[in-house]
Length: 221
Image (cartoon, rainbow, N blue to C red; front, side, top):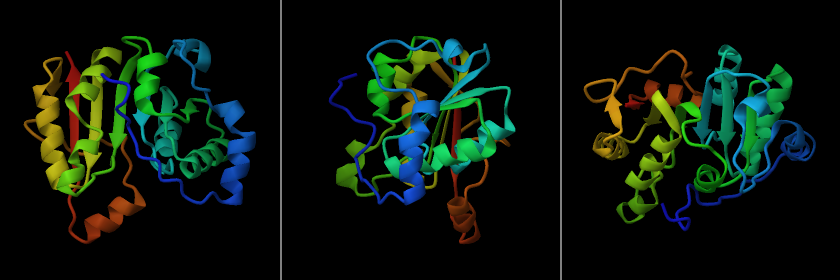
């Protein structure tokens, strides 16, 4: 996978005072600085437990809820946008979470430099930017090269879970995941939403308006 590919386009939102303070004071405690050295995740979390990666956690509400509800797992969230990082840092502190760490950097670079092969039990990618205009589809995160790279970091039996509320993106994601020979679908096409993925406020509003959400869950062979 070429390092020129990015997992994001930087759209720096306005930081609230609380988010700025969190980035300044809490990121050293709950964050992992980017480096070109492989991580020892068991050492970082201080235990052996299932390790779940989330790429692009947004404002972090689902991430914090999942980590609180499943203390038996360790979670590593990657996000570039400072407002989201600050928001999740505040939630980590408020909820007293010890099983969640943050890397504020491009996910492609983190995968390439920091994560060992076979270190993950699961990968979450919830509501990635749909880039709805056809000319922008090439910017979508879920592409064959990225999925192939993700498989490198998954243990056998580990899973990739993607959720989107854009139907044409769901169709593309399904095609890309099906084309990866290292993965097998857990459903015929789309999977029911598993209990561990909470409904976001945005998703609840969309469902009330009749909008659909598609979950795709594939296992590493």
